[in-house]
Length: 359
Image (cartoon, rainbow, N blue to C red; front, side):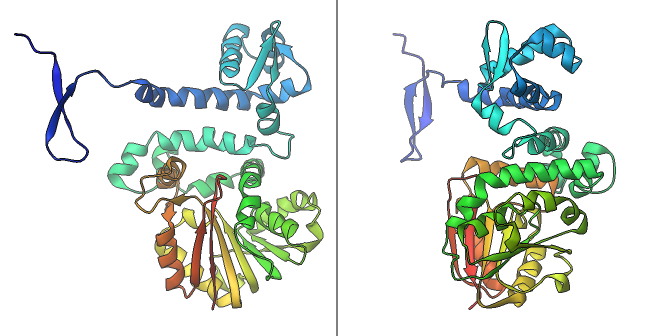
């Protein structure tokens, strides 16, 4: 007698194999993963062409957009229709207009824009991720392999004033999504002066000062950064409480003193030994009872999630010397530098929060 086609699958509660019907699993997960880069590239190209900027002025047809943007009408129509399918555009009567999400995050002129980060993802991260296999095999960032030149991704950020401004704008838009939640994660009201270390456009310092009227801040970053972020800071209602200071935080003697330090997306760029040195320098410049607030993506303790932190850790592999960390890993680094009372908070925003104090 013929038996139904059956296979063996492991029982999650036993090492023994159990017979199960051999229905194939749903392939949609795998298909979605190997096609995911296509959606990313649609976004990258639409942003790079300035489609959302143009449509923010008025709805337009593919023909008029093609004329304005220097594109072929029929291929551009395919891109526009794909953007409709992705939920970025609306199409009616042959004309396209921005959806609210595109208007908010994909137009260069909006304060909440993520265009800078998207362009950086397209022009820098996309080529670097093509070398992920090599990074897994050999370890270390893949800048030379991807771009056939010496240096690092930080050299790319600062190669021209325009490139630096684009990157900083991207970091600002991304920071606006997280910094208010990060500064709300712990009680910062006892502190009077905050150093936003490597703070770029100062989104963390701005969020902290807006939440705490008694707090002032120093935005500390490289001279070229400070030279171009003054206008961004001046737009904040708390600009009068934020001082701009030029310096290099790896030249420890340049770090000013305060009773609160904030570091947003700084520590994940560096290996443990560099992080340890920086944390010790911060500890020395903190007053007794001072605090340190760290904004990073937190990995689960067993590192099985969340997926944004896992993917960001791989991003650090191809880009920098750093990685994402668990709260326990941050605790080890902070306590080794002298800090105590290390706590973590999952914010629900793109970045989480870690806080510790100097006893």
